[in-house]
Length: 382
Image 1 (cartoon, rainbow, N blue to C red):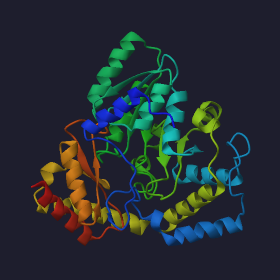
Image 2 (image 1 turned 180 degrees about the vertical axis):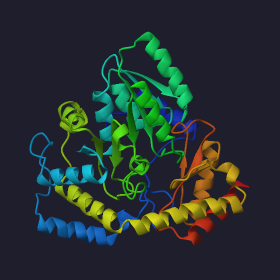
Image 3 (image 1 turned 90 degrees about the vertical axis):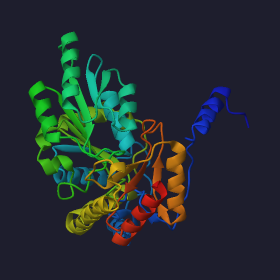
Image 4 (image 1 turned 90 degrees about the horizontal axis):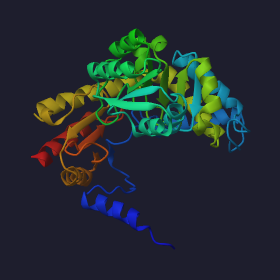
């Protein structure tokens, strides 16, 4: 087989020198403080059986057989998208194969040449990739800083007052776990004629009585588009863009990540319907348990006097800053040896010097597990 080109070998060597090489791993039997399965739906045997039973009632092909614009738009899609629009209090919804596909499809096709996209400096890589694929200008603004955003917009309008302006943020940031002031940001966009887009990946199914953060704040009518995902609290796969009927029609015609890919199979859509029904009917208890675990985690951090290491967060994502790739990897390995799956987040995924241990909390974590992993963390950090 042909050797890897020299430039690619050099890039891998640089990662190796910086102790930042990524690899695929299989970890089984450890206490889960790493997955995005916040409510435990991915491991819920009832949901697995219910999805199978659902597809017996509504038999479908094994595969989707094509893109949604060809043969892949099976009847379950319409049922799911109608449910999502109603559940998330949106005029319309459009399902994509993943959150990555949704963000790439949206940001590569909606902002036009001459338009400007302002994005929080900590938004997900999929948003950045979508913006780079499009033709609009783009600028980042300081994390959760409306003042800095305002200065950027004022400068841009002095140069070109005819641009459509799109502003994008996340309701829960994936690497910090914090949230922006969405009310203030929505008001700012309304006052300045900007279009606000909110990525709800880590809030979907948890906030707003099992809806999202925008719903919790009652801002549904003030948001141009929301991206919700199903691979986290819903325990499934896929994503959707929530917005107006007109936006949906536009995306069906111009979002290349929707047009040119095979649709999700019926089993995935059926499983999503079952998971959403379960979330609606029985989701209150796991959400309550998750919140109790978040509160207990933060309480134990204070009791162990390690608060200075942790970023401020009220979400299921709690991060301890451990500068240096080698050091953070070492502590993660030690925690793994004690039976806990806690993943290190390395640079360049985060800024150099802000490497961290990322704790993802779940409804199924016990107080004993939380207390033990934090006690080990304290010892290893010392």
